[in-house]
Length: 356
Figure 1 (cartoon, rainbow, N blue to C red):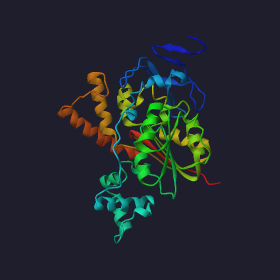
Figure 2: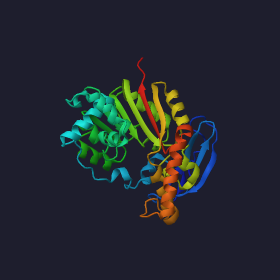
Figure 3: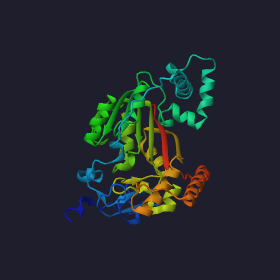
């Protein structure tokens, strides 16, 4: 050990015993956690602060070695992106336009048919139609802004940016992996800043929308993350964040076999309570909605079966009939309990920058 830095197999680490939010020493909840996703060497612990409803990795990789946790194999950096369009089929284009116009303000896409807004509101209430119209992004679609500028933090290969370009946004991204940043720029035509949100040289109040899809859990300081994200927004600008829910039913039931622990890549894990507290401490944000989502319930349980059977979260494991029944029951239980207990797999934050 040299200067507080510990050699842990390949990745050098630094102890992180104290809660970032309040400074108190956290309680060790999980110990000896191994990476069964990308199989990065090392053994990790997670601490939790009951006062702040906040969990974090201890020890955590030093910043200089953080890239070693990914090894160029992270799932958002290795996909082949397919072209995106609003729809060549006139009917599909009209239905998509009706929903996006009625619910998200994209009036230029409104079909020239009677009662288009009423039709859009009706279709919006149908989950499959809503998902199809928004390219699977649902409420991550920002409300329309003329000549709007959008920034995605942790854009990976640009999968989210492509449909936003089709909707008329001027698209930009931040991506720490230089190869992924290059691929995203090439695939989407976006301006991509290689690096992190902390290092990106972006002027304040430059964007109408900032989106972070499973990025905040990868940073050392979620307070700084949200503060910087809010600072990039113009007054009234839209902020959308998705992150794993440490309070969720899957984590409570499956513990170290919960995929979203994802040591050593996930440095912090939040709850709805801690997300709200961080937003309020930032001072720039007005929270519009914090809720938990159950859309990944079945998939999370499938990962648990796979890792317990094979030691690999992503093994090709086919559940038997009894396990398929258990998958359905778990999904049902999570959906029933979510409105009351916030049991969903993910936290969804929708906020806007305050207008002073």
